[in-house]
Length: 458
Image (cartoon, rainbow, N blue to C red; front, side, top):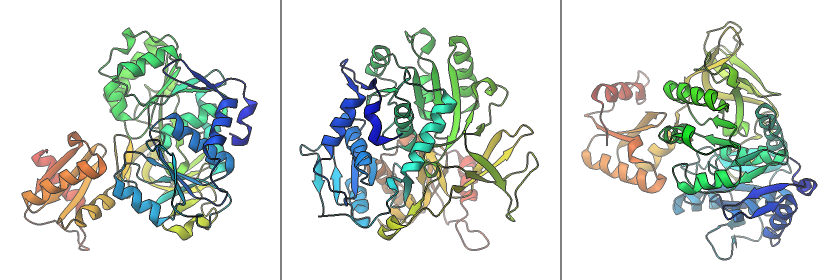
């Protein structure tokens, strides 16, 4: 969207639980007011909590072309401080602080003129490796999503996901791109107030990660009064086949559309989607590229795979591909190094109709409650405490392996405290020695095999 042209939309931008509505003109004015004390050479960080103030700060920074990082307001203070110092942010906004903005320095570091947004590669750990997104990236992916979902100025979504999470942010951006509205809440789908707002705001679209749909599956949606609901979208990790079938059946009965999607923060949010009319026939597929996007599969020798059912690394092409990573402050001044090409690190194959199927990850990342978590980062964090442990896992499972019960118990406590990991997603395993590969590296796959055989839990 053109952030400096929000005033051109006549309708409602935000709907609130108390019935108040904020127009696009008000959104523009209140957002401008939010950043009035900032300077053009600032580098801003916003602690997000799905509040009006954090939304205003975000929009205000984009309208003033002040590069901004979004992070979880509930991130551990030590992790927040690490990122703020590492990249020399000059101002930070907290919706929980009476003053809002806090100035850390007179001005920020040198940044590229097209840098709009910084997001952590791991939303729950506040990774010190940041994804650099441009204004073009944000606009392109918002338009792509709006096109395949059929969004318009009459569309109304809801903040069922966090603002600092690329998927949650994409819901906001894609609706605002076409002049639609967002119902703003920090409530869970299990809370009564979420559904009260859903009805009062006449929400048409609900988005969620696998854990969201696990919660939704416990509710009797078909018996709820949801006359305006039209669309469900799911991303953030693989949804269990049984749940896909359950929601496909529900949506068919209710005449809703159910979109299963795949994406990465490095592609701003979305890369592929599965058309609802192919959901049952392609229930294990993540679909086809978003409009304007293209996908290739590359084998171990760098060759493009053209035959179906041959697995290779997924490479995505599109205007939504990030500028690059920022590992330190000097990277902020660098321009686009990807030129619209993203090697995802994910393994996949096509079927005979060019529908995409995921086979796993090359790199050591898993998705926990829809958020990508770097296993190496968690392992290093625990080892900084002097704990001799390693971390492995798969989607919705973190496995800590150690040599003593004490080290394992301390590790679990740290993961719960510093990263807010849910105990239901944690497991521990005590062994006599760490298995190694032929090159002397930890054999993580063997550890997972041992765990599966023992079926241990916290």
